[in-house]
Length: 586
Image (tube, rainbow, N blue to C red; front, side, top):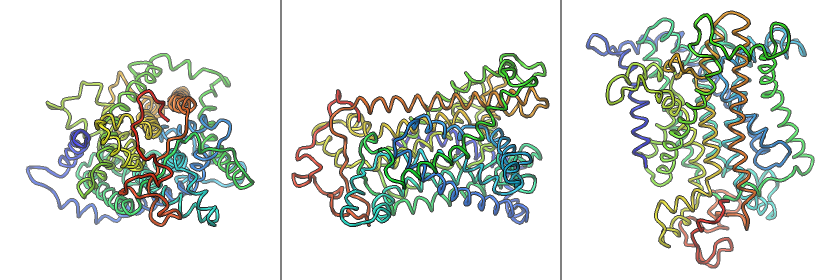
C-alpha cells in the first residue's frame, strides 16, 4: 500500500525539487556548497528566518485558541444552519491569498472597519498578518479536530463525571487525551501553512517583513538568483523536517485507540448558560472573522462604475482586448472544477493508501514515511511549480503538453490533507474488529470495505472536501504550469489584479465571489449525502469499544486492544460478526 504513494511523491515532488536545487548549486561541473555559508551569514536572511518562525508560531497558537471552541460547537452542539455554516467557514481556505489580503487591507486599513469604529489602523502591524492567518486556517482546526470529536463516545466523559470528576477534569483526563493527536496534526498543518505564507505577507507585511517563501519568490522570479533560492529552499526543507520529526515523536507518545460512535448521536441542543454563551461566542467570531471579509469581497463584485449591478459579471463572458486571457474568464470556472475533481481522486487514492499503510506497520521507516508525506505542505510552491517546468520535460515523464500536469501539482498539496484527516480515525479503529472479521473468513479487501469503511466514511468525506477545496484555490505552483488557454480561477484572479483599471479589479472580485460559491456548493454536496446516510441508518449505533488512552479517568474499565473480547465485556458480543453488505453504513 505504501508503494504507490512513495512512487508518486518521488516522481512529482522529490525529483522536481532536487532538479531545481541542483540547477542552483551545480554550475560549471562543480557543486557550489560554499554558497550555503554565504547565504546563512547574511544578516537579512537570518532576520527573515526569525520572522518566519515567530509569526508562524504566533499564528498557530492564536488559530488553535480561536478555533477549538468552534470545533466543539460543530461537533457536539446542534443548531439551525449548522451544515451551511460548516461549509462557509471552509471557503476562506481556498481563496487566493492575494484576494483575501486585499479584503483585510480594506477592513483594517485607512477608512476600514477598525479605523471607522475604533480609530485604530492595523494594516501596518503584525496583528493584520496574524488575523488574516486565523481567517485562512480556522477551518483546518474546525474540520480536522471537529471531525474526530464528533465521533468520540460522550458516555466516557459522562461516566467520569458520575464517578466524581468535574466537567473540566473529565474533559482534561478523558476527551483531551483522545483529541491530542488530532489537535497536534491540525497545529502542524497550520504551522506549515503560515511558515510558508506568501500572499498575506506580500500585501499586509509591507516591504520590511518577509517569510522564506516570499524571499524565495523574490530570488527566483524577480532577481533570478537560483543559487540563493536553492539555499533558501534547502533551509525551508530542513526546518519543515525538524518540525515534522518533533511532531511525530510527540504524537507517538499520545496515540491510543478510541471509542468511536455514530456522529449523528453525539450532537445535542445547547444546554445551560455555558453552552449557549459558547455557541454565541463562536457565531460572533465567525461573523466578524470570516463572514465580514467575505461580505466585503461580494459587495465589491457588485459595486460597478454606475452603482451596484452585474456589470463585472457580464464582463466575465468575453475575452479581454489587451490579451490578458485567450479565453473568457468565465471558462476558468469549468477548468478549475475539472482540475480539482481529478486532483481529488488522485489525492484520495494516494493519501488513502498511505494512511492505511501507516496504520498497519510501525517502526522508524514508516515514521519517516509519515513525515515525508507532509513535506509538500512546507515546501515552497514556487520551487515545486518551477521544478515541474524544468524536470518533467523528458520521457517517461514528459508531461509538458498534458492537462494532467495541473491536477498532479494540486494533488501534491491535497494528499497530505487526506493522510492527516484519515490517519487519526483509522488508528482509532479497534484492531480486534479486523481480526474477528479475518477469523470468520473475510478477505482483507472485504474487511476494509465492510468493517473499516463504514466507520471512517465521514472522515473520508471530510478529506475529499479538503482535497477539492485546496485544489480549487492552489496558486503558487499552478501559476507556473497552467496553460494560457486553460487557466484556473486563482490564476485568472491574479492576472486581473495585476492589470490596471477598475474593470479588471471588479472582474477579479467577481471571479473571487464565484470561487467562494463553487467551494461552498461542493462542500455542501459532501455534507448532505453524509447527513442523509446518517438519517437513513437504523438500529443501534456502531460502537468501537477499545482501550482509552493512558491517564484517562476510565483506564482499565475496557479491555485493552491486546485482550480477547469475551462474555464479560458488556459492549462486545461474545461472538463478533462481520456486518452484512446490505446493512446501512452508520
